[in-house]
Amino acid sequence: MFTGIVRAMGTVKSLRRRDGGDAGCALEVDLGALDAGALGRGDSVAVNGACLTVAELRGDGGDGGDGDGASAVFEVSPETLARCLIGAWSAGDALNLEPALTLQTPLGGHLLTGHIDAAAALLSRAPAADCARMQFAVPREFGRLIAAKGAVALDGVSLTVNAVVDHGRETRFEVMVVPHTLASTTLGALQPGARVHLEADILARYAQRLLDGGRDGNDNNGGSDGAGGDGADNNAADNNAGAAQ
Image (cartoon, rainbow, N blue to C red; front, side, top):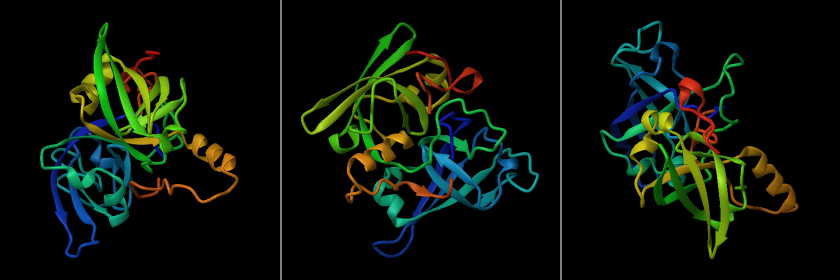
């Protein structure tokens, strides 16, 4: 589980496809300022919101290392590649990183599983004082999981939804991102046309399932190869934060 409070920004070092049309890939990520010394093989890390499992640590990370210059290799399954944007990443791309929660971790955002529901497209971005007002669109089937003043995670950043409206076959929603989050996550560089991972609030998933009467629906379990956001913007204090509603 995660809470959508980005702890560090990393970068893609390499993305190597395995042989076979339905094969997955190996993703190596430079962990930046993340405390790699606290990580070990098998640990979960949210990488742009997608829960991935550490298969290998390189450099000075893990086993008591200081983490300087460390990178982690994640094995990405075909299912995750199909549901996430990982396959389109290139070396040097910036990433939001958050290690899995512990029982001592403050819940500064909202509870996240790292299971990506859909890709959201940024429609517009406008300044609002020193913040940024961003409007996104998702297919309407996922829009029913989004509510005004509810929580949503975009590329692993916990945010509060300010407004939501259905528009034809899509749902459009708006979030406000505070300066600290713009500076400390990938959202700061996001421009219209960009696509991001979206994870809806877990309670909304179960509520919709109950309303559907148990009928088969979308398998919203994509984007997770592990166990395991700025809200209003929920990334608080020194962790991405503020309460811009």
